Image 1 (tube, rainbow, N blue to C red):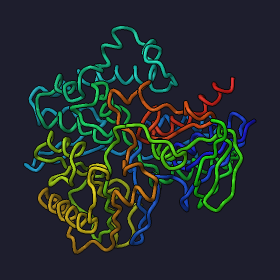
Image 2: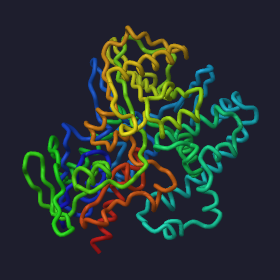
Image 3: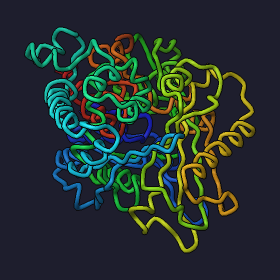
Image 4: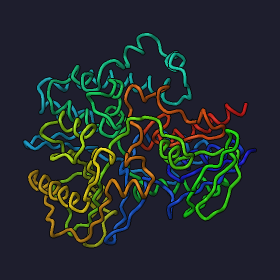
Length: 486
């Protein structure tokens, strides 16, 4: 079978490598960094290990299927712990909401926020559950470029149920009157690079998916899953070379012939799968202008080793701002760092004491920000300090005991750091956004129509962003390559 070169050992690249190897291809993966994982990497600080990016796992069956395809058992390679409760929200006025996969507990939480919301929650879960079934049975796991053929498997009532013409925010308002419930469930849009006021109503499946199927933490963190997938790839015969940066994709007469590495080596290959972000691949490795995509936000992340367990924090907490609509507008259209950004805090020791060390507890903070191109020149040392003060003040005001003097060690990754370290286009942390014009058959395809033999995996192609979708992108690109070979 043909030699395949995969650029980047992120999750999408590793998944593609596994599925291609299972189809009989010889596969070599070149990774520029010192280890695999891409954005889902590991950082060591103050005697602690941090996951650099994703800190939670949803839709574990996607990874079960990845291992099963190779005749292996995910749970024999990685121990998964269910996180309960799943997520908490806090607002500046003191309002709090905790989400849970325990339906009775969730109904009580909703009823405390809004009288009658427990009954409406039941209706929401039925509606979103049907959307979820439609999406994962008939839409997500398919390569289809033509809109009519993409939606053809849906019956008329299923197409109506998808609510593609209604915003996610409006869809949530069909069920809940309280701004707090709608803002909490709508905040998932942040990680699809959009706003609940812009994303289609179909994406009410995002909060449903976590409520219905739970959130999980691999023992040892997300990177333990990445290591298990790397081991699986190598056991199957995939060659993985780290510290090997691809400098150029080689093309002759409109067809891929291989890649050139930064050290001058050339790897001949009639098929190249790039797991570098799709627009970055075209701009940096092919020399083509990137497509005019709406990209998801950038992020600034703090990693803190603290001397005392931060009382008052659960495993996952999102701090939302006073003006929700304005915050999303600033995030997606603004040209400066918002004065009151939303942010996310992961204190994994709340549910897994094993992640701590003697006298040190890990705290991870993620602050979504506008794209680098909109921010312009920034003094990131000054900006990071200002955001640090804001986060610590919000934590203190919400009753979290985290004394700044107890931060024993700190690492900060700015949007510029993320862009340079992981090859993120314009600093975009989650890839191409999931607006109506960039989903399904309208999303960038996982193959090039201008260069034969060039394919893509990862967050900016089909099916989308997030660990499960990126893992599925590797399966879909392998299917695409097989279809093109016929």
